[in-house]
Image 1 (cartoon, rainbow, N blue to C red):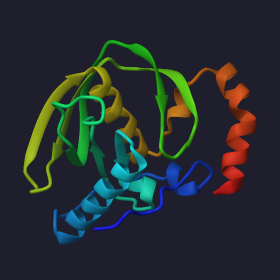
Image 2: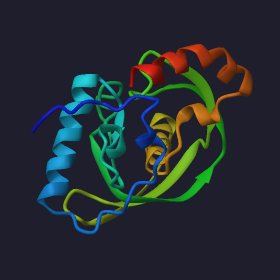
Image 3: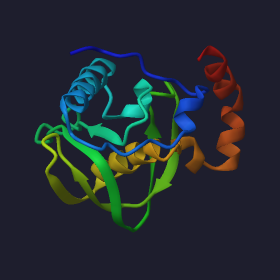
Image 4: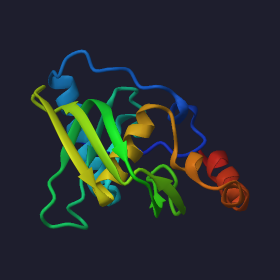
Length: 168
């Protein structure tokens, strides 16, 4: 379909709560198609609809760039059912170009969602897949990965974040 511009830090839409999808129709499928094109061009591992300015509860995760056995997964109206453990790893975000920080997230996540055909599914994953799902889910809630970094790290990033916000 089309590559869409990615919203960057400083745009207030990133802090808004996304609305549920009422029906998996052609408009939603077109949105997902645009998201796939956008994440592939940006060479990202995931993308939430809000990152292209659409406040719908939709995100995609595509770990195929780092795991040849991985498939792109579409999550519509996702719910986090359970999380377990904790792990600290470096994380980045397409809405924060060039910024990577260590943050702590649950190690394992169990998620429930609808697929692109409107069928419900559930999965329990760990590692990078868990991190990517939680990261993208947070976007739907208006949360950003910098919310999880230490106050010292946030202070050190203040200048870069201000510059990024001014550019958006």
